[in-house]
Length: 150
Ligand code: ZN
Figure 1 (cartoon, helix red, strand yellow):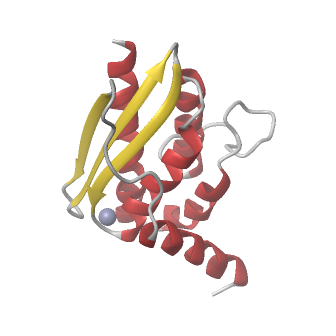
Figure 2 (tube, protein in one colour):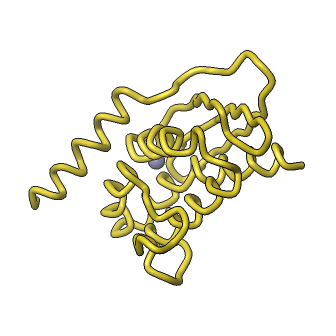
Figure 3 (cartoon, rainbow, N blue to C red):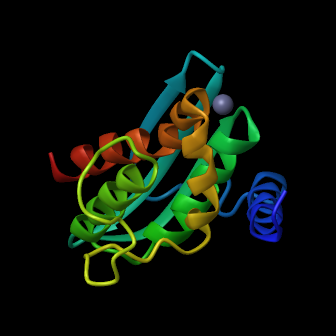
């Protein structure tokens, strides 16, 4: 294992063991839930959206380290972003994981190019079964954003 792989593994385990923003929102919020049957992962998110900006978020769920770490990292980056910026980040993530094909996801000129800790998940694209785990929080986020705009 290279030192970069080891660093990425540490980042994933840290988010898995200490998930950020775990819990529920009590004020007005939208809620979405997702399931990855192939692994048994569950993920749910509460978003507080004001004037098109995600002002707060909380996550719930259980499952493998990849699914839960991806959700923790995702929630870290989308708070204080606009809905549009959150959708750009989602597009970047899907490019990075090879779910969608197209431009270089980490090209600094792209909107939403900065993924922070999420870059630790790029090794997962070598394992197609685990890509669904990493993607679960993002499909759930998209449902929540659709509801916030709907
Ligand atoms: Zn999983």
